[in-house]
Every structure is written in C-alpha cells, then in structure tokens.
Image (tube, rainbow, N blue to C red; front, side, top):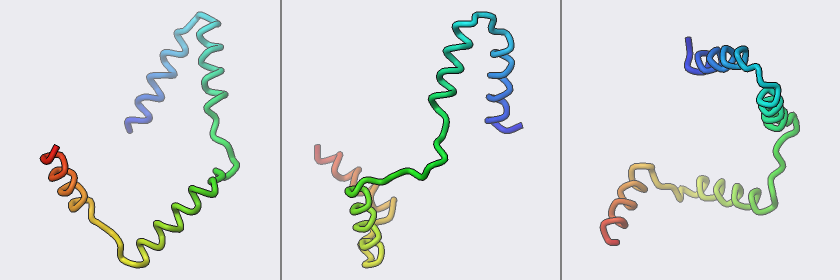
Length: 80
C-alpha cells in the first residue's frame, strides 16, 4: 500500500469515529475550500515575461547545473 493510500485510510478511520458535528462541519469546510479549480491557472504579465526570459536563457545556453549552483552557494556562505 502506498503512503497516500495509508494516509487516506487512516483519515477515513478517524473520520468515522468523530461524533462531534462541529468538527465534521469544519473538516467539510476545509475540503470544500481546497477543491482544485478546473480552470487553468492564469499567469500575470510579469510571470509570463519571466518564463520568456527563462526560455531565452535556455535557448542561449545561459545555464548552470545544480551542482555548480550548490558549489557557488557553499563558497558564498564561507565568505559570510
């Protein structure tokens, strides 16, 4: 059983034991408010511009590997 299945089953078991209607209503409210919208996420103009800049960086080879970034970060931290 996957971790998500285990968690889901545990939550179901716990929900079945709750007798306090206020707690159940609160859980219902949380679940209602956390529904994922079917609409695509709308990006701002700034986010679209940043994505275009990133694509341009990739197209022009302006990249750094994760390892290189980590090395730079460690060196920067040593200077502090």
